[in-house]
Image (cartoon, rainbow, N blue to C red; front, side, top):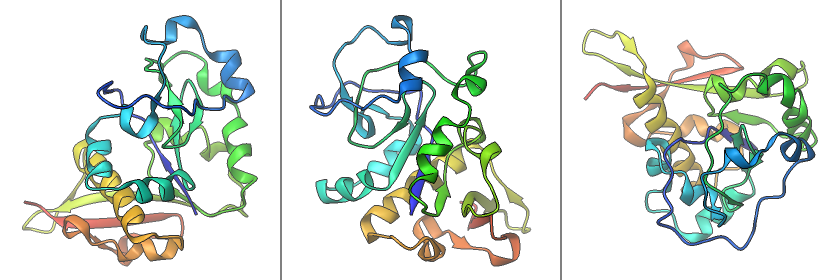
Length: 213
């Protein structure tokens, strides 16, 4: 199983420097410019450098064994680096897919890298980042996108970016803690009072709902 996640704009350097710089794809070497970086030439572990809401939920109470498990399965989609593993060393940067022409420039590069593994993909990335993959999917690919929703007292379902970020981070945390390798076992996710809703889901789209606080 492969897990896809978006990066976060919020970054922190209050973390140990990495001794394992990311291995850049050829396309990343073509697209990167000195102006993309934020001055610091040091490399930091990606999972510790990214510090948005999603990552704070993801990293909570994980130990080194949990992180090593994720390092074999989780890919963070970066507009600058391409595909980043949790323990890869990266520099702080400012590039996202709002930059003109980046989708066209990357083309199917990231999809080809992932498809070589012939593994089902759990997509927890936002549309902005998963659009680097979805246009190239074929009928043989198992690609499952997860949505997180809250149910009000009257049963109305709502979602917004905060709900999604918390849910995505917590789901990756769950996968690491429980050493989940079978994508179907994700349906057992109950952290934060979430439950899988079969009536709202299909083969390519899984929905998890929790009661609104």
